[in-house]
Amino acid sequence: MALESRLPPSLTSLYRLFLRAASASVLDQHTARKQLRRLWRPNFESAARIIRDLDRADTVPTERARLEEALRVWEQRADNTLALLMNSSGSRGLPHKLTRNLASLNYHIRDTHTPKAGPQWKSSPDYYVDLEAAFKNRLKQERGQSKGASPEYNRQAWGALEEVVRMAEGSAGVLLGQPKYRRRRA
Image 1 (cartoon, one colour):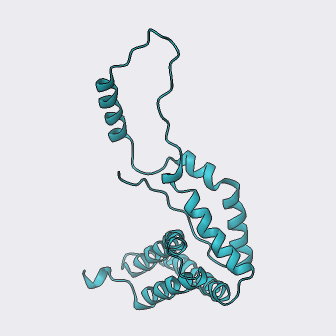
Image 2 (cartoon, rainbow, N blue to C red):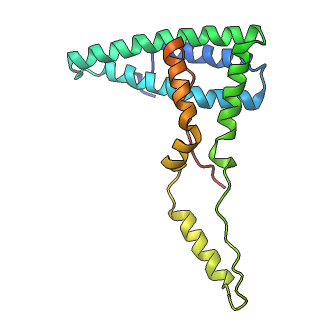
């Protein structure tokens, strides 16, 4: 990896600290730990993008000021979130319930748990299906579909709850994560 593309040690150490705190907040339960990591990783990816944009030499001064302010706000929210995770790991009160429920929510809205649209039964007795052709057509359709969940599904799954989460993030100054959807390979 080239030195130019590396992230600053402060961000990588913050991410590692974040992972340890998230793990402790859900009592080192593997599934919950993995879901919290998936939930908060996009926040760190966006911070890394901001840092890389700041490191570019061709950044306009007004854009640089906007990016520095966004990074400052993000760092403050990350500190507040670490405090929330610390409280969550130390007590079994509201912070612990919040992190546990965020992990559970992220687990249950993932694409692998959505019902797949299967074939429908035709009641007509003269209906005939060429199984080999139907199987080939289904394979073609599956290969042709784009990877990842549909944007409509993402809106429906997160929906109004995302609005509540964003308001809570704004009022408390914490990061509660961004769900990221992707399809699993068979």
